[in-house]
Image 1 (tube, one colour):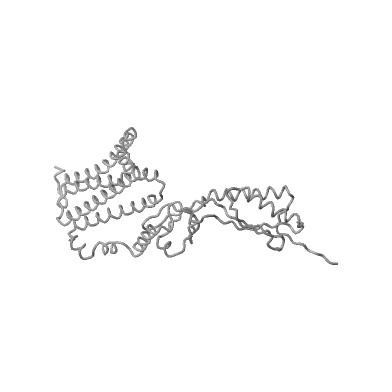
Image 2 (cartoon, one colour):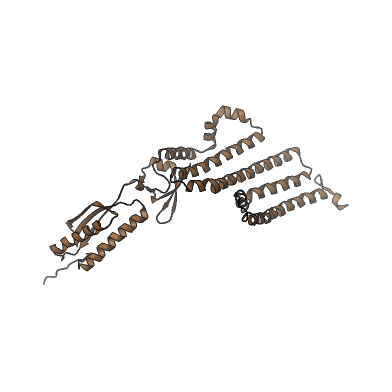
Length: 351
């Protein structure tokens, strides 16, 4: 019979069963996707959040698909006559894949627990300390799970974990597993967390630009610039360079000059200064301390120096106050017929 024919120490029937289970493995992953969709729809109608967490994992069911495919491949291999060494190698790869899939599932599940339960509680508190703690908690959980996974895999392949830990120590193991760069950033992240030079939602000025702190992790800190760009800055760079925490200012200073034309009379010049001072007095977000003075004779203008402080710390409000002040100056100057200067050049021709 054709199915009983033997090639390379295996019958056609064995090869057929091998290929069949490989095929069934990929078909099973599609069933996983279909079942996942039904479970996601079902979870929307329940009150508990656990099924929402599980279905959020099933939206991208890579861990489960990895485990299913590996299981069917292992079954398929069992139908073939292979050497013990090859079977042990395949079983080792399968074991590694199972640990990988389970580790990914655990990470996603714990992240879901944090998202659905912890984040909700954190948002109800006024303190930013717990907001800052969340990214660190996520990073630590990932590190712990991956360390355990690596130890489990090493144990499977015959490594004496007790002797390894005893010889290296936990700290030595961490250093051995991490690169020098990662370890330096990790230490810097811990320092930033405890010293608190800045917190989440603080506006900071770094060597990479001005922006709002969005996340403080163990390896890096995310800062979103006001242009919308997300900067991922290594913690080591932040701890070794100066960082200005703009949010820690009690007030925000505004320092600029206005140039009026040279044909502006002394009376108009005094009126211009008075207009600016009146605008500051009427604006409740401007400090009582300000300076307005005729500073210099410029190349093409008479320059009025203006220094004032805005009392609000919120950057959005700060921009709105500046806008209101500038618009008021422009409007009142137009009413008073005070002309602002622009670059001009006078050429005198002699015959």
